[in-house]
Every structure is written in structure tokens, then in C-alpha cells.
Image (cartoon, rainbow, N blue to C red; front, side, top):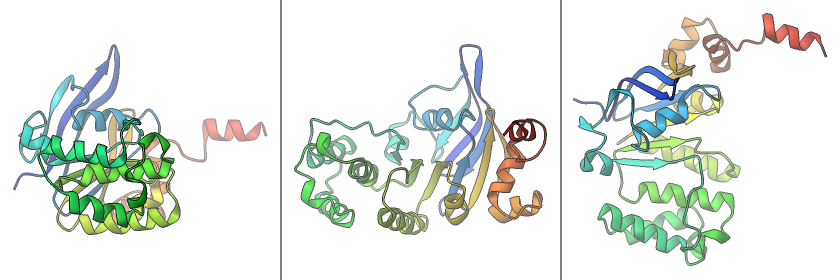
Length: 249
């Protein structure tokens, strides 16, 4: 069976800078894959390549065995970006109705069920421009789920959300895993430990470590994923530059 997402040796140059250098990984149904790495490691570029926002210099990306450009592949994908890029002159209801038309689905009952779950049903007729950060993030989640995609991609999904919403979304993500595949890019190592079936650690455009959390802990003789992350990326607390800086305080 083909993975829901297959990323095969992708490379991306920006001018002479190689932002992504031969990354390969896959996401299966029933799996949450966590892509973690420091700023500048290539996470955002990788997400943009998968979601067809930019074109790879080399390599291949398949969704359900199809080219990422294929219409059926696009309809199989739901994306929650980190940026809150939403049309502020539309109401929440108008925007979600537009999303439904774009994916050729009628899911008004599902829309209202989600709105009640996220506790924003009373503001769906208000302009998105009047929404708080948390309300906009909830609209993004709803928009990504309207067509019930098989592959769900989330970029820093919990940033700026209140604890109640974070807990509810974590429960939702774990239940979605039962019938779907999910890719999460995040800096939140505790969240990755709690949610992810498998983790890939990015550094300088390369996956430097990959496996289940337990496998990585054993491999690096570490106690936490944070310790694995620091070792794998060379950002450890001890040695050279860290000690040099701390010695000056």
C-alpha cells in the first residue's frame, strides 16, 4: 500500500543557498509524523514543497501515490499553516462556504458542529477581521477539515491557543490518527513526545535523526526528546560556544 505521503530526496535551492538537501520520509495512515528542527533547518520550506506552494529543485513528492499537482491529491490534503492568512473582509461563514465550494462539498451541518465544538458558532456571521488570534486559528482548523481529507498537515498548530483549546485539539488529532495520516511541524518537543508516532529531526536541510520517540531515546542514550534534539542538531548545552557564552555572564 502506498503511503499517504511520500517525500523522496527533495532538494530546494534559493539562489545559491540549499534550504533542503535530499530529505526523504513518509507518512502512513494511522500515523502522526513529527518534523522538528531549529529555525532555519528547512521545516517551512519542506511544508511549502509538500503543499505545492513552491516547486522543488529536485526530488519527488507523492500524495496517495499521485503527483502533488494532481487534483485528487490536492483534495486528499488538509493544511493548517502557521501564518494566519485569512480574508478579513469575509465572515467566518462566508469563508468556510467558499472553502466548501472550492472542494465541491456540502458540509453545512459539519461546519456548525465544528463551530459549536470550537465555541465560535456565535461569531461565524462576524467579519474575520474582528476575530482574535485564537478564533482565526480555529477557523483555519475548520477550513482544513471541511472536506474530511485523508492527509492532514499542521504547522505549529497550537501557537497562541488557550489551554482548553490545546487539550481539545490534541484529543482530536489523536482520534483523527485512527483513520488518517498527519504531519506536524513544530518546535514543541513535549507535544511531539505526547502525540507523534514517529519523529524526524531536521538540521541544515537534512534529516539527522528519525524514528519513534523510544527508538531515538535508546539510540542517543537520552532521557527526553529534548536531549535527543540537542545532540542530533549539535545544539548541546555543553561544550565550545555554549560554555564560552555562559562564561561571560
